Image (cartoon, rainbow, N blue to C red; front, side, top):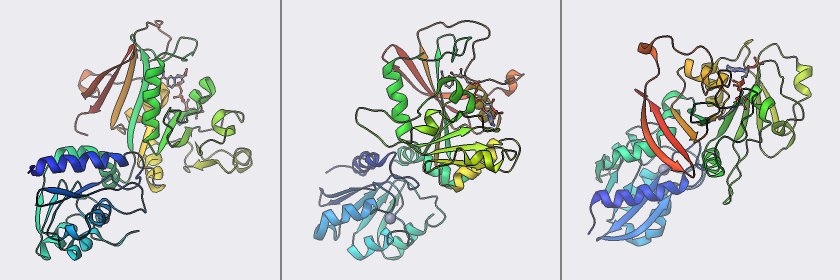
Length: 363
Ligand code: NDP
Ligand code: ZN
């Protein structure tokens, strides 16, 4: 007989199957256990498709009666695209439900647990809570702020340069590190760059992985609509592109860009305010945003206090030069007392390079 923690760990592993494909929903895993035997497993795989509990209960069939259900997130209690899972658990006659963490979605937020308890089901909350919260940090952030979780990424030389003094940046890091970047892209709803990066590098901003992967929306910050009409993000049609412009761009100019895959979004202000941008993206159901530069754009996100995570790659190369750009442009923080402080979460060697993942303190 395994412990509650062991079954919950199993449910958490199963939940991971949905990472990057459930947006705007959370990832969830469920395990049904009867008399010390695992009789059902399930994961939520896509918004609109059955929740984890539904798959697991269906698999368990008759055996679900009197069973214990381990679920990584509080069962839902509202009618969404699917009927409430709390009702299903009650009707099925399960005896006990072990939950890792509550669902902050105001439509659920404790109501699922209350419903189960009212029906006489024993509920245990908080088993492996930290791991479950970490797993859904993007969803939780989105629910709490209604804005996307922002990850800022850059590839730099060991001396902290993201391009040479002439603006060349292909390639600083190894193919292995670049493949890692594509893996991040595949699990984000959208990628964002500044117009200067589009002009300098003409990136495709698509996912190119041996195993495949969905392309996120490509977003370009371009106040005056300077993106070249023949840029890959405009022409290649491989993914959606949103160009965010200021209020002064004429409708006629916008028309030259717009097509089935390319949209122009005007925030209604002459300049692009990052907080307002994130609010608008949140409204458009972008739950996660991968910001890939350049240094000016990174600076704007840092100054707006809008960064939730930093992924930095360092190549064993020295680019040198006072004029060569660094990851964060602008004027920076003048005093040590004001600098952005981070905690390092992960240090990994990728081929010849090093990856560091850090999160700001108090985020
Ligand atoms: P960016 O790519 O950051 O683009 C900046 C431009 O975006 C601004 O000048 C502005 O132009 C527009 N913009 C619109 N709204 C905003 C806003 N709110 N905040 C900031 N910018 C905004 O330019 P950089 O010159 O800083 O960086 C480009 C260089 O960086 C290139 O040489 C590229 O190769 C390199 N690079 C390196 C990477 C790496 O990881 N090694 C990654 C990405 C780029 P406007 O006013 O006209 O709208
Ligand atoms: Zn549900």
